Length: 137
Image (cartoon, rainbow, N blue to C red; front, side):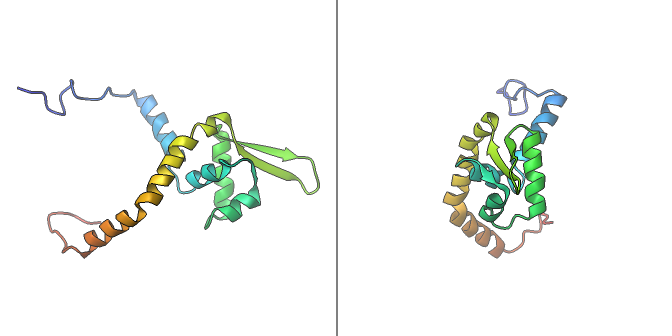
């Protein structure tokens, strides 16, 4: 008998509970609505708060503030305050944050490259008669 996908020989090693929770929290941060846009914008170098706000369509001041704080807390973004009048604050990717650029930009590019195919698939799906055996929520 050949081992099935649920048998130990084919199973991925199970992460410990703490590692799984930590990974989930990191993926929640990176996969939230605004982080990808902020990281992609900061790829070109430091930006001031209002530059980020203008460059990220649809983000509110509150969400930009909360997301930047979270990224700073996670060590992905630095916040530099310059003692000038009015105070100048720049945000930049840390070395750790820069390691996100390759996977983030790959995901952004994938989304851009496939947006029309996905829209077409959604239209086809939505036009199909509803399958009673498939529960839609």
